[in-house]
Length: 159
Image (cartoon, rainbow, N blue to C red; front, side):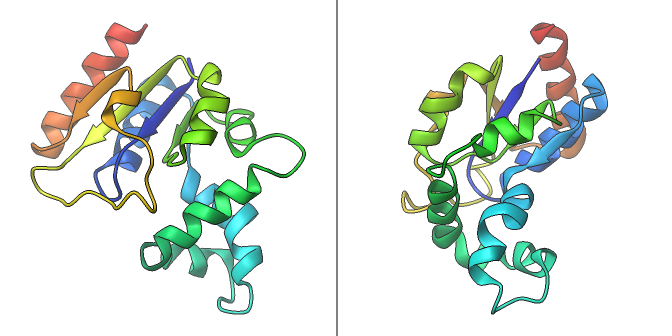
């Protein structure tokens, strides 16, 4: 199965991706890390020594990242989602409506991760998707053990 994990920044998407990978045996890829190498670092090469430095500073440039990934997906060739899924079972962190609509067919399940009881939501300038776009909303307002139990139950139901 191919999963797409979406939600606001810092709400636990990568954590859910890691848990899915451990339970399914299929690796996940953070769109931010993948995009850092392919789409964003080439635009900011004069500001950072490595793509890892660029990636580490992504929270300070959310809107720029949003637009850089959108532009990357307009070029000829496979989309970012298609490239991720060529090697991974889970894509974590899609934010753009156009990308979502053009690649939705690639995913068996879309999971929204919500931690809004503890963390703020992102502005629409860097996040166009909502919980309504997902097949399943993963409540991440509890502790890590509760989240692990929810992800395990989800995987059992999804299979």
